[in-house]
Length: 548
Image: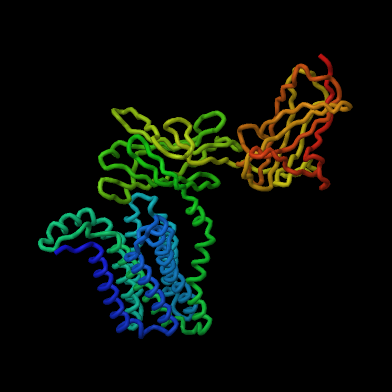
């Protein structure tokens, strides 16, 4: 008899939720307060719908499959799972708040449970643990601490309250079996189980991720029942106010997910796939630019037979000098999963800025892959991909600038540009000669972050004849393009302007301004009093050009 994995999953889900619903209907739900009971049923229905749609849904497009995939992050199932964990935390906090008349140790226990599940809720959606090798040990330790604390609390609680502790412990057991047990045992058990079934033949794998995720969902619902039971017993004094807060907890959490800056950064995942000669494929990456370090997360795949002795290097490279500011070298680790002959890896690298790192300089974040052969490190060429390459082996993942300390703005700036940039001061010599290099110091500030490349121009306009000559370059040279300027920037650059040898002598008015490189349009500017400069040009002063 041929049994498909899909059929086995359906049977498993129906049996699990049938028994869970029957048990809770007979033993748990009647003991809950009406508000808590309705909330528990709503969360159970929500996860049943999500699991059913995820198992039965057959997407025609990759995006649709991602939206409902139980094994993916930042989608509908992960939102429901994260919200359920956050609800456990919120109910624990509310119970502790409204149970002020009870013993301090009980309220401390509830607050600790709330903190643990608040962390788990954020981790469930943002998948923080996947960047750490051996995360299972940390979660097992955290779960063990919760179990010990719950057992101690159960020993000191009234007999009628022990059923809530039992729900919490049972839920943790279900989640541990799904999230850690099946995940770790799947490669060892899958072959023997499939081989020993005899007359029952399977069309594919047996222990797929649907079992893990379903057990985790069910386990966390049992934990929620336990917390709602404590709420029903201890927070009745809160009255209607407590009940209203209980219903708003899921709404508050989903709104927080929408506005969390870290979550926003997760959606900046780069979809560009980069294929290296070694067979490693960079599937996606994330870059988190912090004040003292840059965090890079890499998701990659490699063929099982090719991944040995493969490693990577990550460097911050000065865009002008081409020198590495700081780097990290390591072999691939943190295997997350495997499909057939393909292994999947997650890397998380923190590059801390060294004390002598240059500030206000454009830096590339550069990835290089290599294979160690007899002590030699052979770089792996890039075969395909759309990201910028420095050469055939170096991939640019992004760019950043290490910010310098800001200084107070000048009292009267020369020019205030509409995009938030300010020309604070300029030092223009009074005299020069044709053929010389004219030294001009220009000080800039920025009150807004830059987002595009701008070029600064100098116009030398001869008085009387109106003849003019110009010279253009980026405001701070190539070391810091305006697309990387940040709010609070204060820096200066001394230009060495080569004056043409045939430039006619006389008095010249010297103007400057900014224009967009993409369309050559000037950025409007005003003086310190708010009066617009004509032609979007700031007058720096006059220059007397003597004959040679």
